[in-house]
Image 1 (spheres, rainbow, N blue to C red):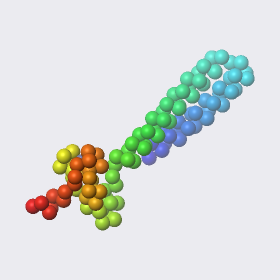
Image 2: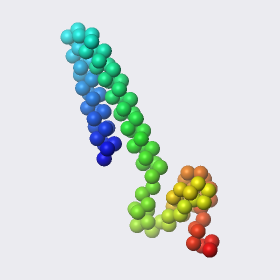
Image 3: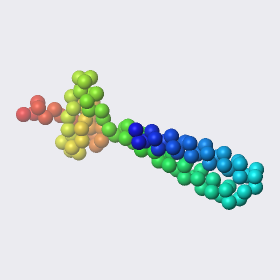
Amino acid sequence: MIFKFTKNFAITLTILSILSIFYSFYQKLPIILIISIIMFVVSVISMLFTLSIEIFSKEKNLDLEELQRQGMTIVECYNCSKNNVLEDIYCIYCGEKLENSDEKL
Ligand SMILES: [Zn+2]
């Protein structure tokens, strides 16, 4: 939810700064032009930042409840202690072979 808000905010800020760049350029207002260019750079950086966080969190966080509902077995990797799907055979984080701890006992 917070990522969606910051992303929308960054997109709005980018559009606003582009408009103010054009406005100050035609009105010959160098101070506003400089401010809007800085605003544009900041908004582009924040947009890229939120997008990369979004992609990163999507890849790294398994939806455990949803996977269990689908009949998957959630196991903890004994090498890196992160949650994995047993059906994946190998740990998606470190590549170690996954084993069901219940079967071992
Ligand atoms: Zn692992």
